[in-house]
Length: 454
Image (cartoon, rainbow, N blue to C red; front, side):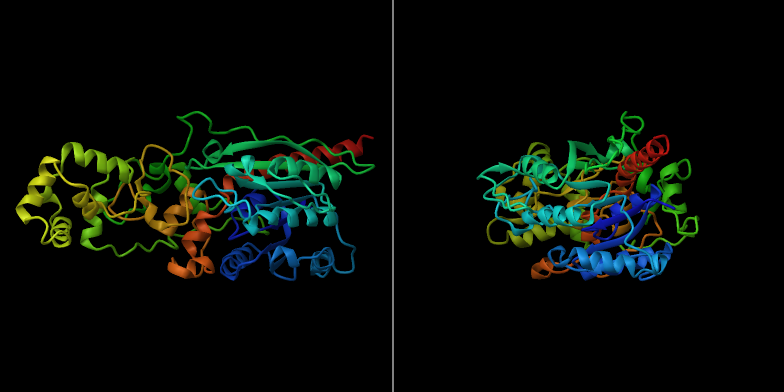
């Protein structure tokens, strides 16, 4: 029988994809959002993981998940009919990271900072052999005030979260291995994405569990890393950028990496899901064309100030600038200013807009960390934002993995909706999750072998 896993805070299922690729069977998973529930359960049904038969997904706040509920949900699965609650080999999870993130303002009082406590509570109650927790880099230096642990311990002000985590795991009978910062690009993912990984193992009386290791990098050298070109150059809408056919990474994405319960894979069969491009205006396309590969908005601005631009290449954009600056500058003065680079801050703002987080990806490097806003990245091949599928490729999802719900959203809806772009941006890259899960599986097998030889 495959080792049994639980995935909490599972999101759309990036971590789960890697867990399944490593050979685990996920018997319980949970997330609070109904948008990700649709994506997650649809994918798992296609893989042969059927609600009530051999797996259970619960759309719930983790604070409402009790030991009794989780155990009853598992025992009521048809695969365990009439049996006791099975021993869980591993629990995986990534509590929400917004309060720990170094991107933007960090808030030590963000209530989401407390959710890892609920994760530990369920670990204490379910008692898996191994535990994996994933979070953003900022988790390592986040401090909390007056945190109250699962067993009632009150921590002092400005206590580091990793120190709290170690003491909490120790208090429920688990040994925590020193956390490690892993870069997804070292594990076959075409993206520079650094994440903190915590691994713990049960140390109850009578336990003789093997100590797991962190995965060794499989693509650590620069010439081994998968590039943006190798990941998404077959997804361009205009002329093909493929000079030598599909890359190994593209073939793997099309053929599928995640096994079904029957043992096969789900190929894309030539269907490219979630690959709708935004309908950019001519002005937006021209603005995007100002960016050279690898350039951020700040770098574009600096280059234009130093070198100017050939305004004849950007007729729609220049006309928009003239309209915005009407009454302040003559049209010829604006054109001459852009040509010479002698432009004012006001002119530059009219040309580039206020958004300064945008960047154009470089085709021969790895992408930057995928986030949830689609217009943060410009394709290196065409003057447009990335599609959901391109972002999913850069995260290492199979092409057969379909993201459901709205493609994107904005305004106040971003507080409640989790559209496709957000589902992708928030996910753990499956290939990174697979590398971690394989090491946990090795420890599980080593522990079983040790028991056999005792």
